[in-house]
Length: 362
Image (cartoon, rainbow, N blue to C red):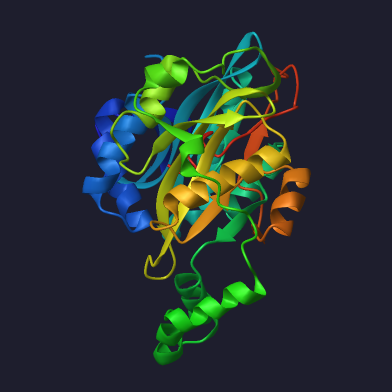
């Protein structure tokens, strides 16, 4: 790591340091080892997510790390994001890539505490907390982001999903492969997907951030929600970093206007056999029946490509309607989204969160 700046807390075993742009390559190597990915995959992602972020200012912290014997053994990265309430812009400092090497797991609290000190200047938030990190957020006095304690899973094709279910409960390879065969389609008779597939023409593909910017999505928001300005849209959906990301205009009845719908695709399962479509954003906010129409249009458009549709940040009324239509609710071990407002910088805690906030599904 290049000339790290020591922070006040130090022990004979390890020390905390501030990260700079010159440290990205080393941080990427460490995260690759911790996450099971390759450095060649992680480093370009970090440079995009951290350095190209339009909300970042030159003086903003990049993150903090723990070093032991001149080796990186832990890190937490800082990712600003602009939100707004009515016409007021509110900058949050997000957290990302919180990793600690197994041999130093007891030191993770030191890194997180250093991040929490930023709460004197910004509200803090994170959207990818595992149960251990959630415990640290809670101990710091943070509150869960609404509706971040579970997700809805709508199955379009059962074989890869049944294969995963059997794999988790039975190590017999023959049974696992049998579950992944067409015979497992019988599961849809027990748990049918009861959302009518609307015409995919209801979704108009948007090819540029400027087309998104032309939608009627810029009125003052009565709830705390992400700022979807031109720079953010261009960075988040049109930077070319993820070929599966897509943004659509959907004609809503309530409100009676075209709204933004954004998605990406990811794989799940023990061998990556489940292809999922993740709904990242629907804005402005629409009632449950409009969500049914949106999901139906997405199911029609992607039915030959994905096995399941994943919905997060769903309010109880939307959860109820969608579960009645065949979605399954999957509870997380702890909320994955948290916010900390020690300095009382937020005028409200009434949120409209979406999965695109932070780093949970990128």
